[in-house]
Length: 163
Image (cartoon, rainbow, N blue to C red; front, top):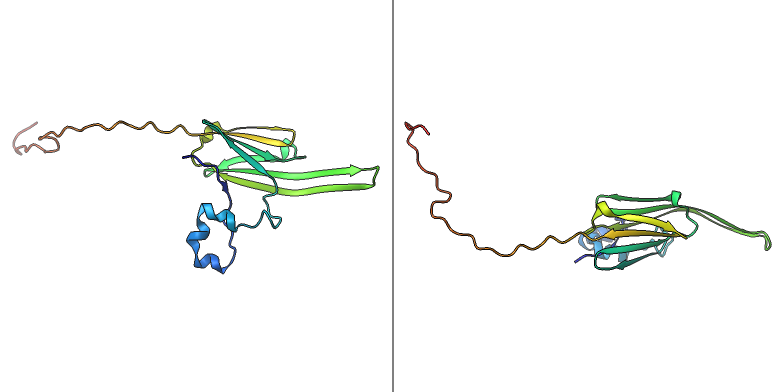
């Protein structure tokens, strides 16, 4: 079974973490205890993931982020998207401006992904990443192994005889 679960780096949250390391270290539960999305942490952009028979399509919303300010990399079976935000919107008519600066990052576990064939494109503020699924190893049919009575037994050779 293939899954695309967002990968979150491990955060020390409290002393409770030390008392229950197995719960907080579990990849599935880790995201429930990471409050950075709600507290202004590094998540900062939305990601949609769709699946078909051969690929996952990851769509990351990065409006106003130029392609040159996006760093997409694979390391240790983790896909990481880093982006530098530097956006300014000025409305001269109403005398106001809005700015957005900073750094955002998201990471994803690549278990079951053919990492050598990942491709990406960027258009209209959306980063599209195609993540091909690894081809499952074909199952070998069961086969019967014949039992040979002489197999594995060494023949005794007299020390005086040459081979």
